[in-house]
Image (cartoon, rainbow, N blue to C red):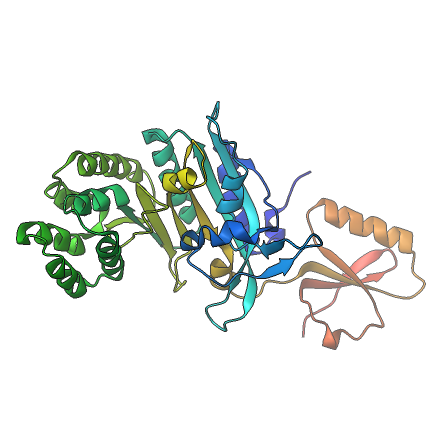
Length: 377
């Protein structure tokens, strides 16, 4: 059956475009349960970055929760042993979170991809490529900000910092707060030369190719070298994508859960990020899985407002018909219109259309087995 694209709104067209992109690349659609045991989220609350979870008691007295995240549900169901092949999965789902606007719980739509298996250079590049092309599908000017936690952790790991100090520095890097980062480094008695290399991260941001050249000068150990080489490969892949890519080390996440590449996507007209992703091998290990994993999610609700635009007509053709007409012939006519992809709504001629909550491109009157155009006012 052919699907007529004009019958979908902009948001639906974007969703179909994203699904087509992922299926063309061999990703299989899955669906996660609507709720999980509350313990799953409590044990990984730093991964969620929220404490506001809707809970309820099941009939056996077990505390359950409406899922605030899809990735944890997917990882939970991955076998613990080695996987014979990688799992390439995508989902269209809903999560339940607290709205930042009015502090009320809301249902939020997401679409996302997960590539689970032994991590290698190709899987990382494939996900970055899919993230960039996903932003292109949205059809507005966009940007992808990319970082590498291996580079940051390799730099900080040379200094023998406490977990608390390392966390403070990551928070300051994320907030682009160089002043507080300098204060933390001074309190930790980090030698000046090493502290200056950390503070240099705050100056590295902007176009990917240009910023990458400045990164190379900071490489001082094998972990940082591997991260730099991976970023260079990412840069080569991004040359074939539209939009703009930036290298920005303020894109960081919890090192207990994430490692390697991490990225965020933005679209013109949306004040908050619409895409977030990265490699989360550390989460896999925490949940006793032997595989690595990388993926991203797109927040459909964030996109909704910018994709609505002007309201489109609900139907292509409104047909009003008189009482007692040949209804069988009328339905034959409607089916013929539908076969051409025309959306048709039938109304009795006596209906009061002044209060109708819908619009149509054309209005015709059914008379004597034929349609007569009704002039618009």
